Amino acid sequence: MKKYFGLPGCLLVLTYIISACSSPPPPTPVDITTYRDLNGKPIKKIPLQNGSFEVTQGAALVFPIDMNLFHQTALSAFASLGYRIEKDEEGSILVRLVKSGWWLQLRLCYWDDEYWYEYVDSKNLNANPAKNRIHKNYYRWIANLEKNISQFYLNSPGMRQFR
Image: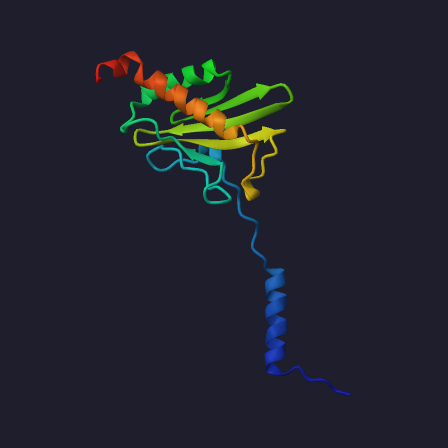
């Protein structure tokens, strides 16, 4: 008994074989720590979900931001809240907050026209970016950073002249 595939069947089988044998290589991962635009400004991390905890926009300061002054006040704010500086680059500061049984790693990215906080990693905070879940105190920690940075920035000697 003879079976015929016909021209459409042969084309379908041939397409399947070609696509199975020539799958593209996996995409090269982007190193977010050095991901910057042409002007050197850090590019925002793309969160897994809109409105995710992964990127929190800073909003307490009037722009433009004095980048040198912002950098110094951010370092002071981190130190006052017990964060440890892990990497300090132009436009971004990577920090870690370590407590008994858990830790949190954040990146503060800033430029003269905006600043934001990026969640990087954590341990024992039940972080799940795909489901937009993290420890209930995470937003309070970001709010405390925002409050301290804005207070230090606005009360710094460089800003007092503008009041």
